[in-house]
Image 1 (cartoon, helix red, strand yellow):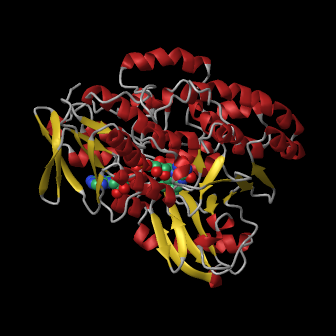
Image 2 (cartoon, protein in one colour):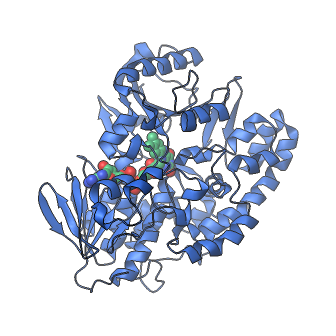
Image 3 (tube, protein in one colour):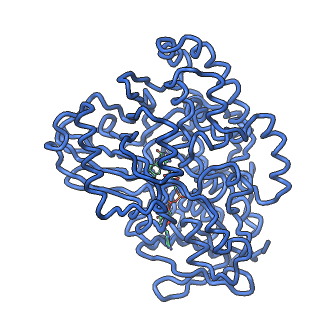
Length: 532
Ligand SMILES: Cc1cc2nc3c(=O)[nH]c(=O)nc-3n(C[C@H](O)[C@H](O)[C@H](O)COP(=O)(O)OP(=O)(O)OC[C@H]3O[C@@H](n4cnc5c(N)ncnc54)[C@H](O)[C@@H]3O)c2cc1C
């Protein structure tokens, strides 16, 4: 650990994803001088925005859960989330269409869920409360007791957690827990698929990630007016108001290390010195491409090759001059195969004949995101990462056509003839645009042996004064995950740089959510506390 004397806290943050932005705000608010260096023309990372002929698309994340986690960043700077954004609650959270034509509207309210479940399997409906009771302690551990924002950087922290994890059965696969409570395939799916949101295979992801549906249930699912990019813009604005600097089209090519310490970065042929360097970029890229192998005792090239990076996504951004009311704001359309399809994507790494997909239709909530009477939507099909060897330049058009034909046959009549805008984003684009190793969509897979202490640490194990933030470090991917990673990384940097601790009760604008009794949170409780 290194301590940098106060008065010389120049921090460079590589990358402007949510994790980079949230950490930069925390550091700048605490008195550091922070500069964000972003490779692309605009900030936001995976939460990038595409605008074409009046159609506005969020290119990645589309649903907001746990707004109080986002609000804590604004509070760290003495502001409120609601000073910058209008949050809209969604109901249902999403609709899931199954292969047999049935559907479920997924909502947080247990009684409404039970009423729907009873039609498919009354026994499953009766067991919902018991399932939620079994998951609650996991949520309590990760969010309530802050394991999600505690640095798992010593083996003793990890070993200290193991008995609790075993007691909670948090190490067992998500599906093995879910299948003990539910028999109907619809219920088994709807309570087990959430790891896919962060690149995990539900049959292999540990049950600790069951805290995601619980998080949704307790905190709601939200949308920000204008789209997810308005959250990016709000964070950028707040950071600049605090005096921070953002440089775009500034790709870092080297983290310079001297005497085992990061001393700055090389960008555009120039050297920028710093007291601390944070990378929000892909972890594989950070270590492999930016840090000289001579300084990497843990994250050697060999070790990096052993990391399981997540699957990828094939995305179609569609500007349509008509509307499809059968689509909710968030809609899933599923193939008959569940495990087999995932195995094709995760393990066999092939492009199957069938596919499941997620559709984001923000115009259902905010019609201003498309020209009048139109629909702005994206279709996300999970696909293998680039270890598959799929040649996307020759495959993408054919595959897009298959997806569009499927959607027309499924019920989106006249889709192709109503298209005004069509853009594709493939695993190659994840690799090229975001420097994502193997074109992964969600960083490092949330497997048991890639969770907590096993992930690359928030404070680099190899280089002093180098830190990681974002989906590749602890706790992991997803918007709440990377915001929590910013809190975790801030905590270790605060120790090293002599900055105020993250939850200093005496510091105005800082608040201990747990001490306020704000966990668990329902939307009305949020409102009562003035969070919303
Ligand atoms: C299609 C899709 C849908 C998703 N949907 C949801 C959702 O609905 N809800 C949810 O919670 N999560 C969702 N996620 C996950 C979530 O978006 C991510 O986990 C999160 O946004 C990642 O943030 P991050 O901080 O890790 O940084 P990233 O967004 O990965 O940003 C990293 C930044 O680093 C930059 N960079 C890389 N290399 C360099 C370099 N050498 N120099 C300078 N800059 C560099 C990149 O350009 C990029 O801007 C989704 C992800 C995808 C891909």
